[in-house]
Length: 400
Ligand code: CTP
Image 1 (cartoon, rainbow, N blue to C red):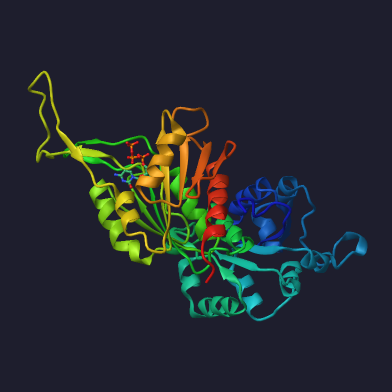
Image 2: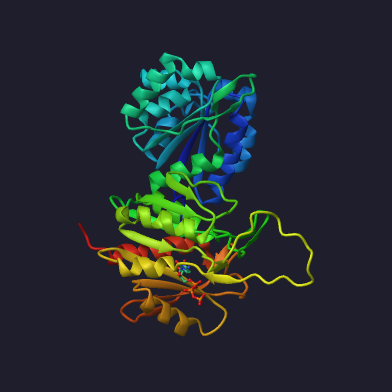
């Protein structure tokens, strides 16, 4: 499930806007993810980016006209039947208007009437054009057809105006497309996730923390949202952007994380705690910056609340998953945490091994289940691992 584009045929429609150059990057992301991408361009789009660029990157002929050389004039109709998902990026006001009204006067608009696969429309235009009632009405009509609209970003536009109208980023469009190609096995479930480190302040400019990057928790949030869950993510200080369709709550300290998790807990069916929560915090936080007057500085620490332990005591119907980062006696320590915190599953990983742990993009874990089973998983990307974990969780959730 982590490879939604593998063996899929995607139609990428490109229309005549300055953002056409960004669809080159989208094409690259799609082919990298294993998709076969057929590009259909309007005549105006070819004015911004040459078809040769798309042809070279897709490795396939690009369709620019209904009437192609050699008389094979129905290529776009054949393509429609073979498409798993169609995306138009950028979509101009003109093309949006044509699609809303069933006009088919070029290869792309003709193709779009013939295609029955899911459709993603990514508008990009001047802010006033985007906000014009005609364009908004046409987008509503497309939504009514079941098309998925990826809203443009707000910002300063090539035409000099500031406001909504800038094409969504290729990553955002890719994620919206991935969501449409992924089965929704978490539909109706609410997942509460924690991610990243916490920071425990010593004074206004210093804190105690750890190198957790939040990558595992964010990968899980993204994967669960793509699989149809409502996802609530409580994140410590990390430099990762909010994933699409995830409700993100940013916190700093273990106490703030505990309060937020406790408040959101009643809504959750599944709780996954990837956060590397600080176990200790300074007893006192100085009001002002501590000056270097002494040769030694002693800071006294006290225990923070064990959030997962406290959730385990209020478990009810909830499926609880913990993470255990260990430098030794991995399975024994993890099993002991699973029991002490009343968990259904614990994901144990050895810190300090290559390709695993806090800042890596990959992870190598052992899963310990409540019923005593253990499974060692091979090294894999955090994205792939996120999907593996979710698949194991969904198998064990009660069906409604
Ligand atoms: N955890 C938590 N609150 C804490 C500490 C840990 O919710 N104050 C959660 C983590 O999010 C993780 C699990 O408990 O899912 C295990 O965390 P870990 O740091 O490996 O273990 P600890 O219980 O803190 O035990 P120790 O530090 O002694 O290994």
